[in-house]
Length: 241
Image: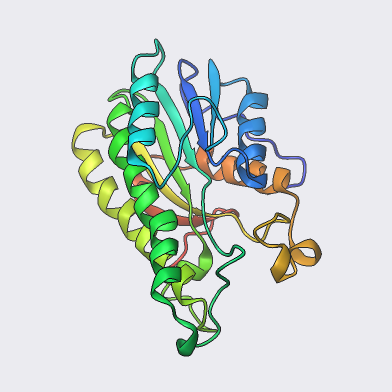
């Protein structure tokens, strides 16, 4: 993938809308910007706790309310990108050893990284039209790969992202029965210079969020229904579970 490559998302019909959850974050905002720049959608809806309507992964009622508002629009949902996620905050940081595992930390990681996205699938996947390509993509992480785990540690983050991958795979099997053109993807964005990665040398080794967004949309553009339920890196490489 070259530096100048810009996805035009031409594989997705131009009759619909795109939604980005977590649009207040670096990657989410860049993905929403790139989707708008493509000119492929009638509207690009940015979603976060601070938008109107508000979307909070820890509040199913807010998710249901946003889905209901989208359902009555006069354009189909062609793209939903879940760019939410939790790695650390003021209270919790990734565990380096078993003795650092804390129930509250693990429960919160699963609530944001697995249960929240599962609720997005519950309420938004039924909005995917039966005809034409539509995509639901969620940002996973390579460290959620069991087969690729060589360093250990980061128990809550690894396990919650592995759970997210299983949720995408399982949902893809159900969705395929009624919406055969749907593409459900778990995507690894790589290390991006963002608030999430800064404590882990993100400023040194991370890429700009705009580059990550370009690469992720290129992967989305290039994959069809045969790839639904898969786990892919920003380079297009299929990752091991």
